[in-house]
Length: 344
Image (cartoon, rainbow, N blue to C red; front, side, top):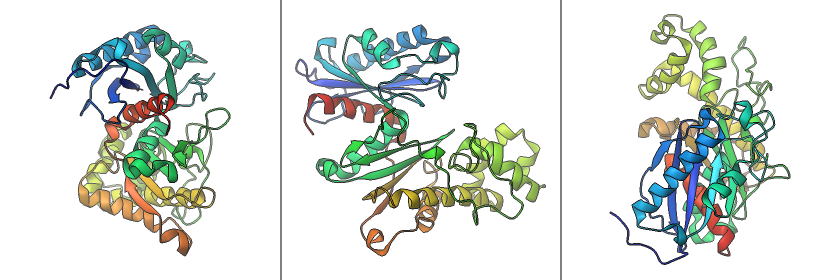
């Protein structure tokens, strides 16, 4: 249903810029999201910054039209992109996920969006934005009194750490890069299973196991050597990797070995996090939990089983799925923008 036009200066806009799509949402200053579903356009990031800014302007205008607002109603914008990028939204000097072209290296994407929209714009990476959304949705008005850790399983492994309601960004903006935390591999890998390698150059970090890239490059080739007659052995590895989850939902033995290793890896990372953040909640997001309910519940249960906590921690911590994950980035970005104009 189309909302009536808000009073002047009463909304913020959240923008989630990915490799293929840019998604937008509108958040009223009273905390109500005015767009209930996805509103997205092609992101055009592979065409370079100018094309990407045009796409952002397009989806921004579409979002305001959908809720019956004017540009003058918008007080601030929130932006997220895949990292690595600085705390101020400057893409890494070596590029970033989905921002590989040389034009993007060291590009100040936050400032460019600010200039395009004529608004103050806050920046988080996409994992941090989703983590903030999950945290605030779960804890509501009490968000500032709680802490959480989130792992988002996708092509890579994104994440975020929220302490007392605030995203931990770090001095260079690289905090919460949980995918590149080294985790113990003893007992996780099978005898003779090669040490997994990440695209970042690390060996044995979380992303090398718990990501689609980890499946494609490390887990699936090994497990197909154990199950040479498996139907996925007949497909190119890229196509096969994308089908592993559907086999897991069907109870396929090889697929469950793969996802069991992923769940154990996330549990080991959460064990590490529990010893330096002691959070109230752990969140898991991504395609692995956007699955059939029985598979989602099994996976989350395995993550919890492999998260080693002290008795006092186990009594109070919760394990949850990131809600509305397709919209979590844009919504988290909008929440971050709202924080800049409204005291927590």
